[in-house]
Image (cartoon, rainbow, N blue to C red; front, side, top):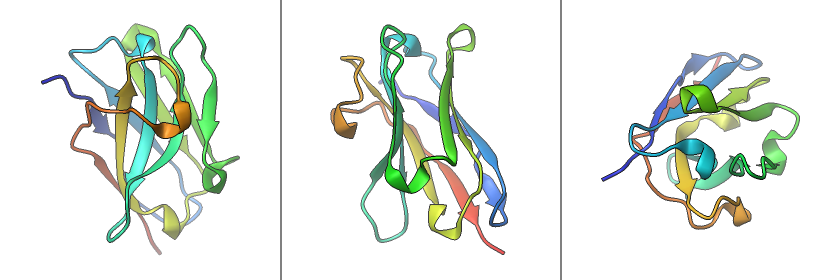
Length: 124
């Protein structure tokens, strides 16, 4: 079963930064829309940011992270990154990346190939 692999989470203070990475050994990510999602305890998984396939390249951000998070690709490394700046306690969650085969962000629908996730904790 093809899966994505997330890394880069950690414990940071409010206002701090982290860069999450998403890669796969079975998928060439440039052909997929890649979305970052998060799930906090007791809450449903929510879409945070998405980058369309390299053919399109458009990006999407949920309102709560606009201006703080940046999604990007490095096709040579088969990686997608989520740079998170100005972190807030409400950003605390397990972060997952998912792939969408049509190549479009489509309102964060149709994503799969989930990895194990990476924990982000923002606390004083």
